[in-house]
Image 1 (cartoon, rainbow, N blue to C red):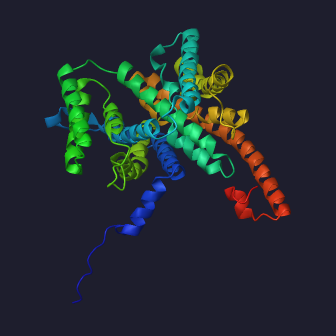
Image 2 (image 1 turned 120 degrees about the vertical axis):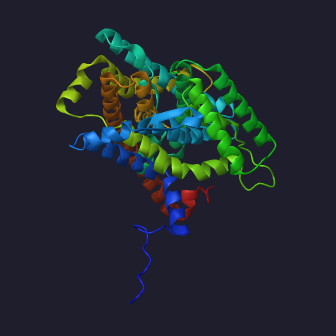
Length: 431
């Protein structure tokens, strides 16, 4: 009798080149944003079908690690645990911008920093005004403050065929400062009762992490257990555990030594970005975006002050805050808008910043844990983010058409002058 061939896993294991290709794709904003969008759509469909009971059961299923004092639901493991990796990557990006990027000098950082601060303060004011007039709760004041960097950069990447690179740099810097503001808000305002012994242990762990970095100690077996311990101590200390990711990201060295091919921060970001974009953030979205979109639920979104405040903050507050902050800074300070950008570009970017998905959902969960208002706030975040994305797409497409026309006119002029197109595109061959 012929031997039975060995069984292979479903779809098999990806080969090394295929795994590398998938990782490279997930490092791009377009693919990462599309994966995040797909997870959110699955969550919405799943939570609004007869299988919604299974969704709730899985999301609320508890398991833990007793030795670390942890007993969390699946939903909390994704928001408190997996999302820490996302914030670790964000912390590395922030450190890079502070050390070697556009935030390293006050002159270049001033405009996007002012824009980001205004883009956080004005949406919070819009929310506070809305809920005050409507007699709602001010607990969710921070929900419309956060911009989702993955979604925003994904929309920009899809449209940006001729848009100036300065637009992406401005958005990236603004989003990094925005993330820092959201992290500080979570750490300061959304903490439970503090356990000072646990916090002292977490601080000691961060000091050890810092010393290992400065001593040039290598090896994941040092850093992964230490990182898990810091995360668990912060969680038990009462501070949202995702702050651990940011803290470690800021400690990692950004400048490489002469004998190093990559700095530790760059190497860590390179390794973790695909896992963050392809697993951590989509799983968080899967268990955070599953809200009811029935007629009654949608009616509550537009008739309840808290979700109305979120929509007003993300859609109107972000546009007014970022655009006005940028204009006033350029008008009354020494900060100057990049000469490659027009004010119409800033308006489109301010509209794009109203996409407040990941961190906004997280703050919504912290502000209204396990309440009906919290579910309505989640729905409001989704509606506001979709509205901002559509408005920004319209504006960016118009700007892209303008830049494409200019590009084509320049190429025609170059052809008339006898200068090959390749020189025109690279800026070479000019007089």
